[in-house]
Length: 568
Image (cartoon, rainbow, N blue to C red; front, side, top):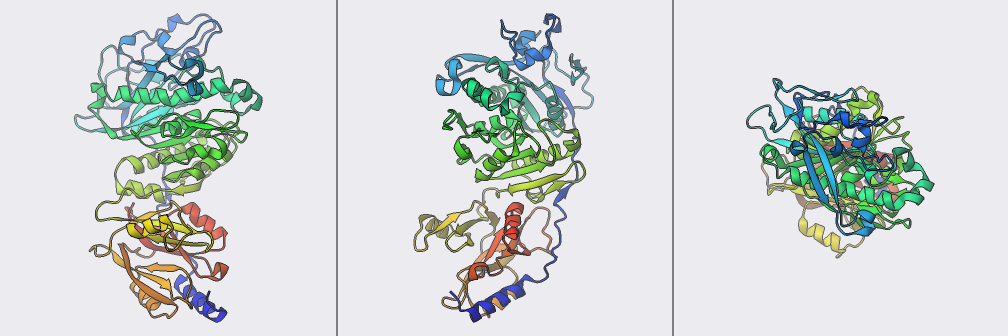
C-alpha cells in the first residue's frame, strides 16, 4: 500500500482529473410518450354465438375458463366458426410434478391475433357483449389485410393475467396498442380456471396457497406450454409466417403473464412448499420480454424457488414494470428476482400503483415497454441506445428506474466487449477487452479473487480508424494505487503518463469521445466514477448502468462524467 504522503499525492492527482462536480444531464434520459402507433389494427376470426349463453352466464365465464360447478366452460364452446378460428390442441408432458392431474393429457387453446392493417380495411368491427369490439375482424376464410405488400413485422406473444382473457379487461386495449406499433400480437386464452379455480385475490392468501398449491403449480406450468405451442403453430401458418420475422419475437405478460414469459425463457418454477424449483421449458424464439405488474410470488412463497434462485440461469432480456402499492404482485419479490438476472434487465417502479392497469400511468407503461422491445428486437442502434439511456417518461405518473442494465449486442468482428470484474477483498473494479485476459481472470490464474459483475459495455479494438485510442495505466508497484485507469483523452493520458505513481500498460481499445459530455444518439455513455480514496486506495469504475452509478454515489463515490461513448 502507498504511504500516507504518497497516497495524498495520488488522491490529489485523481481529484484534479475529476474536474467540476456539476455534470450535464443526458438529454435522452427523459423520453416523450409514444402514444398510439401509426397503424390501423385488425384481428383474426373470433366469431362467437352469444345466444348459447344460459341465464346467469356471461361470455367472460367462457373466456376465463370458469366452470359452472357441473361442467367446464371455455371460449371454444362459444365459437360459431371454429374451423376458421386459431384453435389448437396442446399435448401436456407426462410430468405430474409440474402438471399434476393434467399430465399426459391434451388441452384446447384458442388465440386472438391482432396485426397492423391498412386504414382502408373494409371489414367491420365485431361487437362484444362487454361493450368492446374486435377491430376489422376477419370472417369465414378471410386472410389478413396487411398495410402494404412487403413489410415483415415483428411478433409479440401476449400472456394475460390470472383468470383474465385477451379480449377482456384492459388486456385487449394493450394488445391493440402494440399492434398499432407494427407488432403482430398473438395471445392465447389461457382459461386458467379450467385448471385451478384460483382468482387474483387469492394470490396473497397464504392459507389458500397452502391448500391449493398443487393446482396452482399445474396452472402456472401449463401457461408457458400453451404459449410455446401457440407460437409454434402460428409460425407454421402461411397466412402469418410469410409476413413475420421469426428472429424478432418478443413477449409481454400482465400479472401472472409476467411470470409465464419468464418460465418460457427458462426460469425454474417453485414446485414444493419447501421452495424447490424446476425448469418448465425454454423457447429460443423469444428474444426479449416485458412484464407489467409481473407476479414474482410472495415473500412466503417466491415464484422461482428459494430466494428466486430459479432465475439465475435466465438470459432472456426482461423489463419489469411494478407498482409500489401492489400487494398481489408485490414489488419486493420482483426486486429480488430482477437482481438475480445477469443479462439485460430493468425494473421500473410506478409510484402508488396497485395491482391492475392505472390509466394515469398509461403513457409510462407503453412507452417503457415499446422502447425496451424496440431496443432488443429492431436491430436499430439508436433504439437500443435510447432504451439504455432512458430513465423516465415525460408526463404521466411518477415512474422510477430502480434497476437497469442494457447489455451490448454481441460484438462483431470489429468490436470488443469490455468485460467488468470485481474483487471483493480489494473492493476494486476492473474491465478488460482482451479475451485471453478475461479467461485468466475467470480461471483465477495469477491474480485470484476476480468475478464478473455482468455489467459490460462495448468498444472497438486498438487500431480501428474510428474514435480515439484508450491509454491503460496501473499504479506503479510500491508507490501507486493497486488499480487500473483508462482514458481516451490525450491530455489526460499525457498527464497520467508523466505521473510517477502510474505506469503505462499500453493501449487498450478505441472508443468515441463525448462532445461537451454528450454522446451521439446511437451511442451509450460510459460513466467514470472515482472512489474518493475509499479504503486507502484510489480506484475507478466505468459503467453504463444508472442504478449501479446511483449505488456507487450512495457509497461515497464521485461521478467524473461520461468518458467514452460505448457501442449499443
